[in-house]
Length: 130
Image (tube, rainbow, N blue to C red; front, side, top):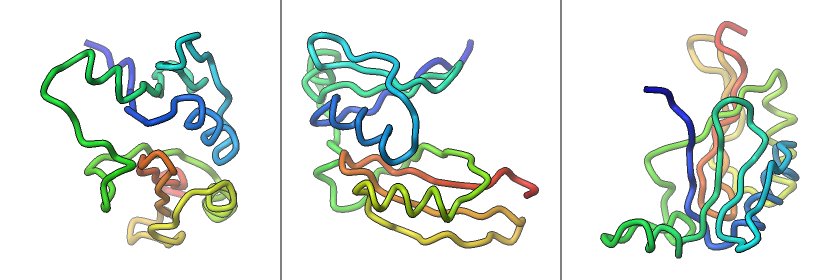
């Protein structure tokens, strides 16, 4: 088995794609003409967005809409960057909510956390050992 996708269900797929480009510099790979599904250019493993309506079509039990939750969901996307502070400031300037400012962990890694307008939780971190 091989890990292929992380799909985040969001209220507006195009808005999430645009936000991730502005906030993190990750380009859009494509947006389906329906507007219900899109992907970022993230290399071998894809980060994608799907409309909440697609989730309702795929399974009938429903799901927690991250943007409506007062707290972030118990999962995150992590982006590795050599300059966590600059990446953090760029994300906040683009509209992310700061959850934790950049700080150094006991193992030497610098880490910060932001929450995107669509509710996604993002960790910005330096490579481990740097």
